[in-house]
Image (cartoon, rainbow, N blue to C red; front, top):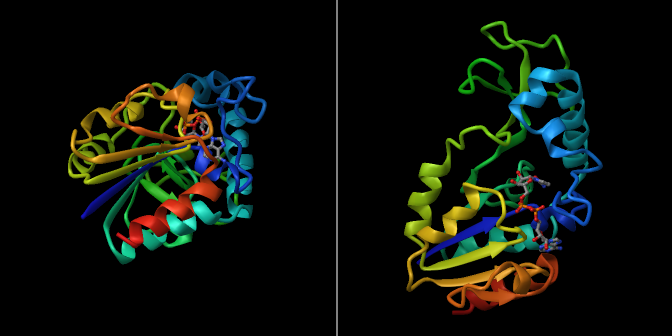
Length: 227
Ligand code: NAD
């Protein structure tokens, strides 16, 4: 049986990594237009680099929480694909082996002229002056607002195969990622686990579970493993 999980920033909130659509609409005090767009990079690459260096340090210091760990156990019984909007690597560190990163991975660097050229980062910083094999500045390997989402095609293909679909900790406001739910087969069992589920989802075909990920996901996983 095929189980697809679609996660957002909310699943990592209890690992200490903040979401960005909080009350003030900022991401760790920054306006996303100033730090997460190609225009921001052209205007002020030092600021953008600094912002992601701090985010990367926080990711390296964070640990997977019970929700990430429970999802990894699903592989004992199901064919699992995790599609995440998160740029952290907590699903992998929890043990999940099949993770699609729609918005990239902060632990890697990429060439600023050739997105195919990516590198592992030693430590938490990319420094200004560090260049790729084509001699251009290294930038974070993340998809900024306004950039193409290269993994979208593969993610759509996975959604179409789902028998069970879990959506966890996402406001479903960032497109094109949020559009993935339109590709889930009608007959698949679908759940949204998010404390704000009732406000976020009015689709009666998706069951709302208005609870935090770390308390509810392990219970759901236990039930699924017992089927
Ligand atoms: P979002 O910030 O728009 O929404 C977060 C959602 O998580 C909200 O619906 C909120 O109710 C829910 N939430 C909060 N605490 C939760 C908990 N304990 N358990 C379950 N749900 C909880 O997040 P998004 O929809 O993923 O969009 C944000 C974008 O920002 C993503 O595309 C991502 O690339 C980026 N981002 C990533 C990280 C990360 O990698 N950890 C962190 C912040 C932002």
